[in-house]
Image 1: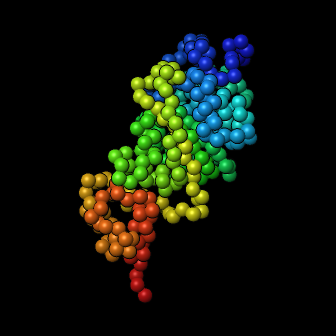
Image 2: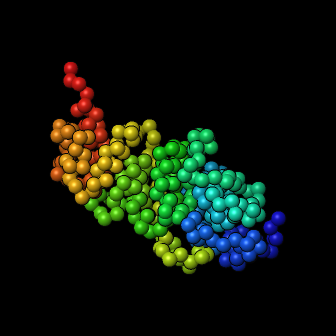
Image 3: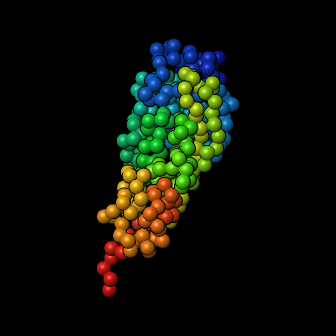
Length: 282
């Protein structure tokens, strides 16, 4: 059990250092283990997520429980998914029976088997190398997850929220815009983490569009992938063999444009035009 005197309501630097010493833990760099140890920052992140008492919350990568405790404090029902089995005993001490913890990889878990009808809210502190994959996989495979608040490296955050014509705009931007509305809602200073990261961190909130209103991504995303695979080329060249001149005309898209000039609405129109022009007349 947790020593009451050593366990304040939210994670502090002193408590975290004590946990790591007692369990002989070292932050794992490749897993992006930078723990938030400032209670005010934890409460701010939870507030920006919009989590309310009774909400079902999926936390990706709880680590030693900093954000988990913040969600528990507001009365949420938390399921925390942790890939690193080394931290599980310490995490169990921190959260006790106030949250459920599952040892698994969020990139390979079967969301349809794990989650009920929801709705769920997702909160996560994600490392640079898997952030986009985790979020985009959940958007595609876990429709019960209705909103996300993710803390990521600032460059990754910029890709989630980027608009057509900007330097950061690419496949993650298009796919995120397909599934929902992404907003940069704040930054997190490096000095509230242990260890202190060498990169800037930002918070992105994503609110999912109604699933019933979405077109089939299987028609849209292959065009996006092909277009951005050769982003310096015009659409006429990068989508050669996939999109006819007639489809470009029907979609009202200039084949001389480049992929970064097209917003999600244009990509959807183009996929619909490809489907329409491929149908036999009569």
